[in-house]
Length: 163
Image 1 (cartoon, rainbow, N blue to C red):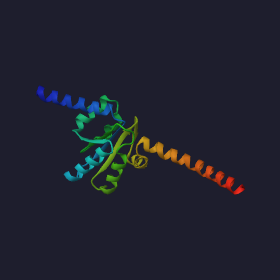
Image 2: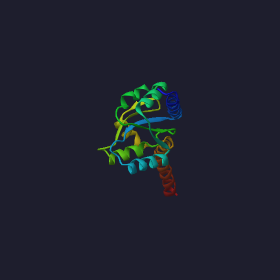
Image 3: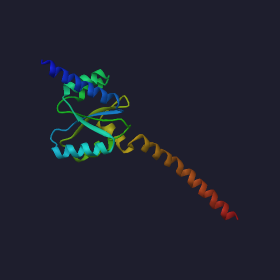
Image 4: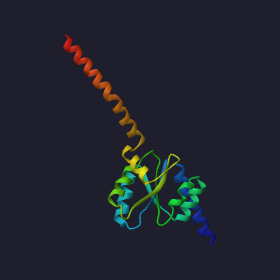
């Protein structure tokens, strides 16, 4: 193999390694059958939500994944594959799930790693509505706050009624 080509491949693997090291989640998808416009729309929507779609050769992805200890994804790297990465917890999951729901015949979520744990398509669909960590915290806080507000308003109403 030409030394220049070998250096280029090492550079691509290094780039993928850097991307994987800074990512909280890495999802492997199959995009075959999608039009260029559909892939570009998916990329745009993911970017708006803090995620990134990267298309690389499976051999280079496999090498980078094995170096980063994400070997659980090896089984997902069969056929045309792309990776969706995000630095923020849960970013892009809802976009991926919505896109999957509208393009089930040609778009597949093969699996991924979120926070060091392997997840499949069903688990991603379960996590997608939660969204980012900040969104999950705000939903939790509003759920916890609601009974307290109701209790306070009830006490206030009882106090006003007693007068």
